[in-house]
Length: 253
Length: 128
Length: 128
Image (cartoon, rainbow over all chains, first blue to last red; front, side, top):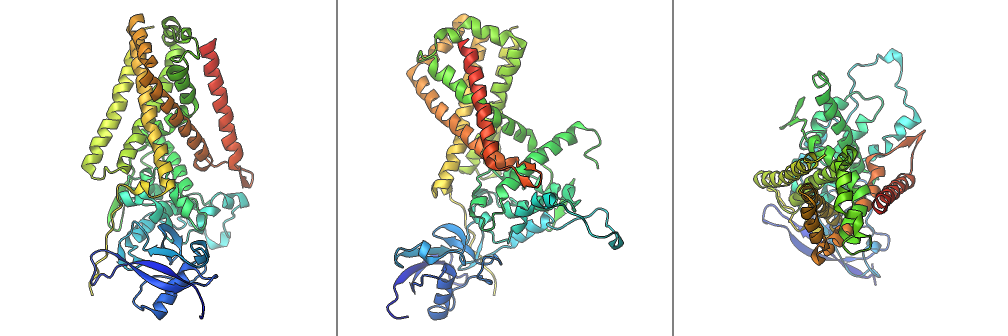
């Protein structure tokens, strides 16, 4: 690594054993043109401070583990190329844990609240009547798949939760990714669980907390478009609510 | 109609009561308000449009007509509730976080909507 | 070892952090001008119901320079509301045709056509 330029990696660190609040720590890191922020973090962990704590797995934007704030934007650190943040390999990149989540240590967030919300919306195919195996598979037309396919790409990286001010302001808010997944299953022609999910998605913690800031869709690395999915559910749940109140007996189903 | 998962019980909310007027009013405001503001607040006061356009007789004739009343009510009251709901959420965005302060903000915003809805109705129903 | 996660709170100045959030807040603040404008018109409607003199004094207030300044601002914000509202429609109500989604362009364009038509109708009715 001779005559390489170095840049400053400023990491917001938090050690629960000794700290009450996070503090910034700067590392001088060699610049490589094909490196991403995650590579720089691994270099620090291997060469400078083995206690630096962060999650990662696939290094190819599939696993959704390495989401963090880079220069105050929520990104997958495996997709954040150093060259896009530095000029001639020099400068400073700041890295911090994802916003709107409790910090376990350094860049690792506590995601228990998200796991609860995700489970609450039942993101799996629900059948009220099971189809016997002998009757064959479920047929789904290309247009039926197209209707929700973009909502299926979610990797639970939680960038959308870090970008959404309503998540930060309303801790109970089910949030973008879980609501988008609820919508994805509601729209699936094989699914019959929409009514069950609506008890959660149309509750006061559901779609109504959203004010269409749309930051979720902006930061989504998979173009899941949670913001649109939530507005569609607002419209449908509103119509549903109106029909429930206009048609006697409908609500009791 | 309610679902308990893990630690939380979820019940369907009555939010559509305020969300429907918000959405409908947003559309009406988008289509109608710029031209209305231009006419009543800018063009006529500045003389770009002859003051006769908003003369008592003309406006009275329009507002006395039942169809005119329906148009005026829709064009005024829907955007009113759109604004009341959106402004409430904006104040929450700006820092009303406790349930107490949020109740106050909601009461003030929807109270504003209610007062002006009644005033609009009172005005429209007072002459034919 | 026991856990001790750090619990961050979002500061009330969150919306000043990025141009994207500032733009959102400007969009939400259009509600102030929408609400104020329709409230003024509803007061005007009430004045109309009270007779020609009351209506005349309402028109007098509209001609005050401060009123004109307010309405110019309201016009700018209302137009911003229109533009942002139209831009979001393809995402709130996506339309499928056959196996594909209708692209945003035609959906947004259609709204501008309706907006222009509505504005022309209002102007024509005023100038008639």
